[in-house]
Each structure stands twice: as C-alpha cells, then as structure tokens.
Amino acid sequence: MKVLPQSERPLDGLVVVDFSQFLSGPLCGLKLADLGARVIKVERPGIGDLCRNLYLSDTDIDGDNSLFHAINRNKESITADLRNPDDHAALTALIVEADVVIQNFRPSVIERQGFGYDAVKKINQRIIYGSISGYGEDGPWKDLPGQDLLAQARSGLLWLTGNADDAPMPMGLAVADMLAGNALAQGILAALVGRGIHGRGALIQTSLLEAMIDFQFEVLSTHLNDGQRLPERSGVNGAHAYLGAPYGVYQTKDSYLALAMTPSLEVLADLLGVAGLERYYDDPAAMMTERDAIKTIFAAQLVTQTTADWLAVLQPADIWCSEVLNWSQMRATDAYQRLDLEQTILRNGTVRLETLRAPIRVNGATLKSARAAPVLGQDTARVLTPKRPRNAAQ
Image 1 (cartoon, rainbow, N blue to C red):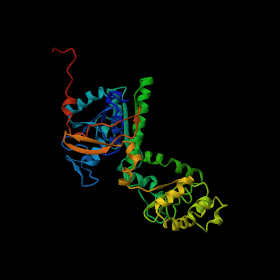
Image 2: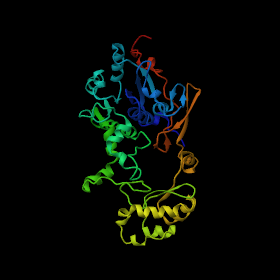
Image 3: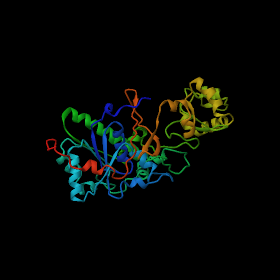
Image 4: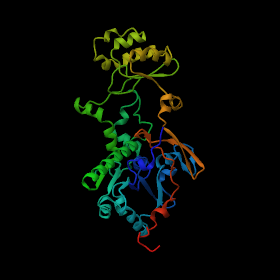
C-alpha cells in the first residue's frame, strides 16, 4: 500500500510535549505521531522512561526492550531534570510553542514540578493538556499505583472471561493502558478541533478505571437494568457471560472452532448432525438457562471432525463461525497480508526492528514511518537550544 507523506498527514506541524512514561500516555503520543504530530518525549537524564527496561521477553534491541521500541517509535527524545532551573526554563520555552502536553504521573506529582495544567495554561493559553491517572484525581484510590493489572482487577472485568469454575481471569494484554491511551488521543483530537472553532485550549482527563468501565459499557448497562444481577460465566466453553449457547470456542479433531450467533438451534443441530436437543427447539430461553447442557452436546460432536470439515458445512449455511488462529497462522493469511500492517524500521541506520503500523488509513494510504524509537536524549541539544532571532545579524 501507499505510505502517506508526512506533509499530507492531518497533524503535520502540530507539536506535542510528552512527559508520560510506561504505556498509556506514550501510546497516546504514538497515535498522534503517526497522524503527523511532532512528539517530543521528555525523559529523566541518565535513566529515561522506565519502560526502556521493562522487558516482556529476553529480546533486547540496541539497549532498549521491544515494548519501548513499539510504543515510542516516530518520536524525539530530550532529557531534562524538572527540578533544575535551567532545564525548567528550557521546557517552559518549549511549551510556549507547543500545541499539546501529555502526562500520566500520579495526581499532584506533575503539579509539584511546575508543569500541571494551571501552570502550563499560564504559559500557553491555547494548550491542549492531556492527563491520565489510575483512578481519578481525588478519592481514596487516587494515590494507589495506576498499573494495568490492578486497574483490570478493580474494574470487575476479571469475572467476564473463562468458565464458571475458573479463578478471576485477566486479559493477556495491557488493555487498561491501551484503552486509556486511545481515549486520551480521542479527547485531544476533539479538543484540537474545538480550538480551531473557538480558539480555546482545554484540559482532557481520563483514567485507567474510566477506560475499563467504558470498555464494559455494554454489559454494565445490562447489569444496571436487570436487577443488578452479577454475570454468570458458562460452565463449559466460556466466551461471553451474557450470551447463550452455542456461543463459545470448541475443540475439534485437529484444532479449535469459534461459534457465535446462530439463527436457530434446530438449524445448527441439523447441520452438525446432533441429536438430543429437540426439547429446546421451542424454548428460546433455554439457550441461556440450559446453556451448559446444550454446549456440552455440541462439544461432543464437534470434536469428531476437523475444523476445516466443520467450516465447509457451516459457512455456506451462514452460521457465524471461525477457525482459531495463532499469530503465525494469522500472518500467513491473504487477508492479513493485503492490509500491509507490518513495517521494518532502522535505528542508527543499522539496527533492524520489525513492528506494526498505525491501524488507520488516510485517503487510501497507510501511516507508516521509518523513524525508530529515539535513543535517550538524542534530540536534547537540537530541541532545547534557544532559537536565534530571525532578524539577528548573519
């Protein structure tokens, strides 16, 4: 696919000063950078973003872990000690010319350093200030660690996945961080549009907990309106606490098959050659009340044939179903390859990194970028050196 030139990206010319670290704030910065913004990452001298050394595996790429490279590509890095008067003055001058500031420290931390919203607004009235906390800016949880697993655990999410007898089950991704980062990016973009209309800056705030609650809005709305009954996970083949049989993932003779909605229990039973479900055909409520019994009968039949065999029967009949792919199998499909999602970038011209592009396209072109995650402080001198007045003697 064509790669959209920097000059044609929607946020080209926008300057973002990013104080955030780890995942949620930097993910927001990455989204803005891919859309064309100049994102200047502010890091501590000698240490940098602690994410540089937060290893998901034993993969080290040019002194930083793969997670840092994935989240911080396409950015610049400067180092500054927020307590140092000279560094503080240099950052203040930078913010005067900036459009957006991002931070994700615990409440009151950035304020003590002199770069909270009220202080920054005095420097730059038009600033869009984006802030992510763990659980909001006040209340009994405000000073607790805003960490992904802990936010998932406090949100109720762990009781929605798995089977009824399973322990609470977290998602295998840093979903609270990712959703909060995307929510902040959405809010910042909206504020930028608003500033273009009325000329005012804005404070945009979210938290890991708010993002997790919003993630569950569909089922929480059900909970709030059904007598506030707690969700009940399936005893077998669990996939969704609020959906009835046959919804779930089933083992086949050679792998697994995902089954979603079906127009009729009788139609599905006939296609699969399953007997013993006739008493449920005229009782739509049984799909939920007898969920485990129905799933158990389907499971005993599905394991007798391969996934490909069942897909050949079910897909032509418009039964919503799918093979269950691992990453290698997914990457080998034509559907994945046509989307051109992967890219190769170089750091220092020699260190090769395979990563992914942004998930959106603009005018039919992708938002790939060849800029790798920055080495700690590599842009400090260029970014913070005072600009020479335009009318100065040559």
